[in-house]
Amino acid sequence: MHTLQVRLLPFLIVLAVLIVPPSQAQNRDTDELGGALSSIGQQYADNYTQPITDALGANLNAGLFRTAEVGGEGIIPVIDVYVGVAGMGALTSGSKTAFRLSEDDIPTDDKTLTIEYPDEDLPTVFGEENSPRNATLKENGQEVGDVELPPGLLDTPIAPLAIPQIGVGTVFGTDAQVRFLPETSISDYGSVSLFGLSVRHSLSQYIPLSPVNLAVQGTWQSLSLSGSDDSINSGEIVDASGWALNAQVSKSVPVAPITFYGGLQYEQFGVDVGYTFEATTNQRGNSQTSTTTSTVSFEQDASNNVRALAGVSVTLAVIQLNVDYALASNNTVSAGVGITL
Image (cartoon, rainbow, N blue to C red; front, side, top):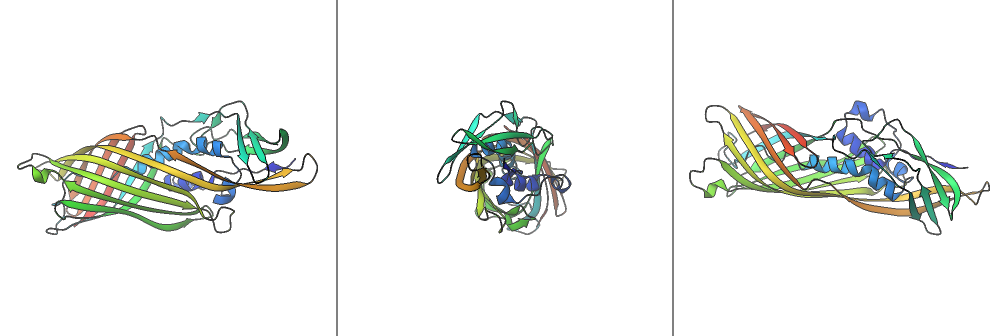
């Protein structure tokens, strides 16, 4: 009987490279991005990757500001410039670690394949790492192959992410911040690119003698993952995007270069996944085999919608350091270091 060799989901592999230290990620299966995803069905992929979508959404919408003061941070009159790196970590303690499925139908050009899963808990990306399981592949009720299901991938209390960002302002009490990562190849996993834009406007400028700084900010971000050029899924596999709206408040300590800040934020983050499923099966129990393909697609939304955060920033000459903590469906800690001019 032919056995389908299922590797780690490519979508998950690339995200794992983004959010897991290299020493941990390099110990995993290095199957190609598109080739790995082509051997697993939609329902399993949807349930398996949901926790990583939640963590990625929580991270990308973190670290968007360090103070509610718009203008007046840098040493250059009128125009402020910030160049730095934001590091975020979504806590995984509340993430789902297991799920159950009965079967998954995959329609192809000339038939429908059914993956029949074992009647037990199946690990998500944050589930058991050393628990390999097999599912049964059937065609018209007849067993034609086996599917090796991936175990849990990440055993970590926090899923980290680092993003470069540049801010500039102000014009009429408004500044902007850009996050950008050009298309970058990640070994055999494929390539990843990221772009984000934030626009912030001061509210305290309309309040004479306001004891605190107040501002509102809007952010949009987009992330794309593509398969390796020589894989079955060489084009774009994952298209992720999200937006956030927040209200900010901050207060500086008069006798020290310290600013306390906080805010409330409403956010949404979603992922569209599309790939080609390819399976090789026996021809009704004899030695002949055939290969069938199907286009599979699904959408996921991250669980975070509202967060409340509080933090502190310290400015030493032109160096600014900050750290904050956010309460949400996925609690997140964020820290940043940058140069203010």
